[in-house]
Length: 229
Length: 229
Image 1 (cartoon, rainbow over the protein chains, first blue to last red):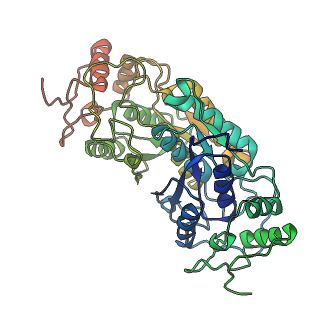
Image 2: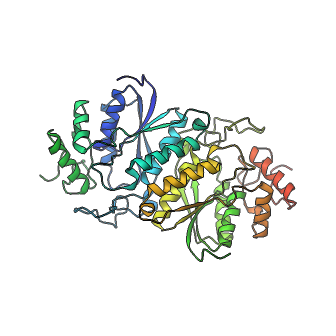
Image 3: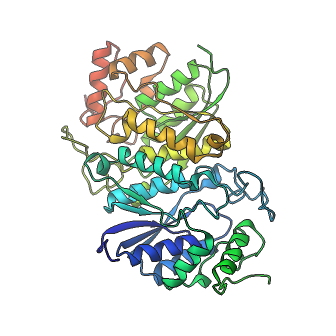
């Protein structure tokens, strides 16, 4: 499966379960992975600490943390401390949605890919066990792919950048089984929206619920460090 | 022409000739304009000073300068001081191209538009007298428009955000005539890639050449402040 043979790729790495699995999968396929994380005004830095650990442990060629304060715009429970993170499931698009987040993140990944250069970008979006964010759907990724081809010098000159979404059709349990088979240590990842300073999970938010159910369905021991049990 | 009747719009404002004309045109159409500029690691701050003057003079409802250091990625003469800005025309896409710049800027405009909320975004791209950047072409804007609809809560809930490009089919001379008729004071705008600290133009770079020729063709007195004459 080493088809990529050392080709450069940009891998969006949040520090959570999904993006760690994506990085492991891109490494398995032979990519030289440049991990990209964002310090975007999220509530806690535990996620970025996790991203650093994951990048190192899974053998990324490099890891860059790009700072941009999406909290300047407000509008999300993840960046605006005046909005409460809910502990019960929402109907529709939840308040933890960060406006245009994946469009912004993919745009910056595209900028970095052009410079490296890299023709491949990996993102851990998922349209099965997900939180209802519009910018996680395959039709969004397809539209961005087309935009990326038209937007860039690389695209115009013939070698269009490819957006890879290896998790898009997997259930959370399938993602966990995949990562487990690739040796991902999920104990060092942080998915919780309300993780504490040590990266311990609340066990109650939407993200924690999806994650815990995934481990149960996968039959894999849940390595998550919980603040409560 | 006051069809917009106080509707919110996000207007990308660089401080140059084109975006000043776009702001004047959106104001003429009755939009309540929220100007958005980027401190993205460009060579000089004269452009941002110009954006502030233009926003105030043309009656923007507000003006936000969003900081993101695209220079972290390098790869452009506009953000990387080790690359020389050319004074002769390039073949193909010039070194002043900033990787994925308009994709990044439009993504952030989209984020702000969702929060305000605003259903309209204005950008001064132009496909006639332009510098050959791929992300100024109408097909790029069309692709981004589709991405924006799929990316956002607003789009999913039915009210797609509209990207307006009022200059796209105009020559530089037509843009200048339009702005002149709307009372734009081009003396306070800065287009030059190598403007000095006071915002005075070099008169030699690609952007200066296009601008000077535009005033000549429009038959409008060139209010540009040149460092040399």
